[in-house]
Amino acid sequence: MKIDSVQQPQNNLITREAVLEDDQGLRELISVPMTTRGVQISFQREPSYFKASDILYRHKLHVVIEDTEQRKKVACYSNGHRPCYINKQIQNLRYASDLRVDPSYRGKSLVKVLGAHVKISMYEPNFSQMIIFDDNHAARAAMQTAKTGMPDYYDEGLIETLTLTHLGTKRKIKAFLNRTAQDHQDIRHVQSCIAQLEHIPAMNDFIAEMSKHYNFIPAYNFEELAQGHHYFSGIKLSDFILYFKNNKLVGMFGLWDQHSIKQTKILHYSPLIGAFRPIYNLCTSVTKSMPLPKRGDSLKYHVLHTLLCHPESLALHHRMLADAHKISKKFGIGVVSFTLSHKDPRYQLNQFYKGECLTGMHGFISFAGDPRSNFDATLIPYLEIGRI
Image 1 (cartoon, rainbow, N blue to C red):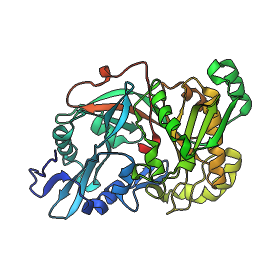
Image 2: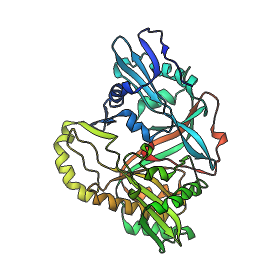
Image 3: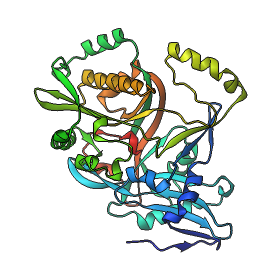
Image 4: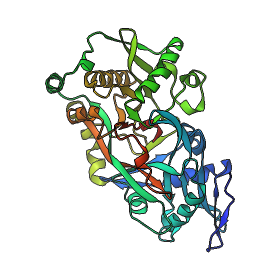
C-alpha cells in the first residue's frame, strides 16, 4: 500500500514518499554538519542516497517533507524492512533510520508530522527496530521522550560500536581467555580460508545455525552476494574469511569497504586540533589511535559483515578480529569497525582493545504496544554495523 502525499496545516509543506528525483535533496539533509569534540563532520551518501539505502532494506520506505514554496526537502526519515531471523524464524523486520530536520525548520513540529506518517505506514510489521547513539541528542529528544503523536519507544539495551585500531596487550588477553576457557574456545585446530563459490551453502546454513544464539540476524542468501546483488554493494565473496573446525564452519566475517556509497567527511577542525593534527598523526604509531585525515577528506575504515561465531567462542572471536585488522592493514587502513550488544559475551573482550567507542541504545518503536514480550529473551541481540 502506497501512502498518498499529505498537505500540512502550513499549506506549503507536503509529506510524501520520496522518489528518485528527491535524491539530491535527501543527500543534503543527511549531510547536515554536526560538531563533536572540536571536529565538524558530515555523514554523506555519495553519489546516491537511494544506492546507499540498497544495503539497508529489501523493501524501501523513504519519506520527505517538502516545502513547495522553497522547493526544498526540509525533513525525512526511512522505515523500510528486510528479512531477519526473529526467534529463529525468518520474518520481516523494519529498521527506522535517517531522521533529519533542516536546522532552519526545527521547532516547527515537523518530527510530529513525520510521526503521523509513521502511524499510517508502519504495518506488517507494526513495530520498528531503532538504534540511537548517545551523542545523537536530537534523535534522543525526539524518540525517547514521550510525545503526543509519536510512536512509543521501548528500550532493549545498550550496544557499543568499536572502531578498532589495535588489539591491545596479548598477555592480558591470553590471561583473560585462559580464565574463561571453555570447550568452544579450543581453536588450535581451526583453519581459515577465503570464501569460494562452493562454500555458499555452508555460509547460508551457518547464518541459520547462528540464529539459535542471536536474534535479528539478517536472513542472508549468499548466492545473491556471488551474483552481485545491490543488497551487498561494496563487498564481494572473496572479502569473506571462513573458519572451519573438523570441516564444520564455526566462524566468519566479511571485510566491507563502504566508501563508494557512504562517507564520514571531516569538514572542519577547531584551531587547536587543526594545529596539533600533524603531531597527533605522527604519534598514532605509538598511541594506536585513529589517524585524523586532512580537512575535506573522509575517515577510512572497514566495517565487519556477519562477524559471527558461537557467543562463548571468545578466542575464535578474538582471532577473527586479529585477522580482520591484519587484512585491513594490507589495504593501507588497519581500522575495523563492529557493533556488539552489551548482552553478547564477546563484548567482554572490548575492554582490552584500543579504538574509538560509540555507545548507544537499541530499541523499538511502535504505536501498537510493546513488541519486546514477543522476543525470545534467551537470544542475544545481533547488530550488523554495515546495515545500521
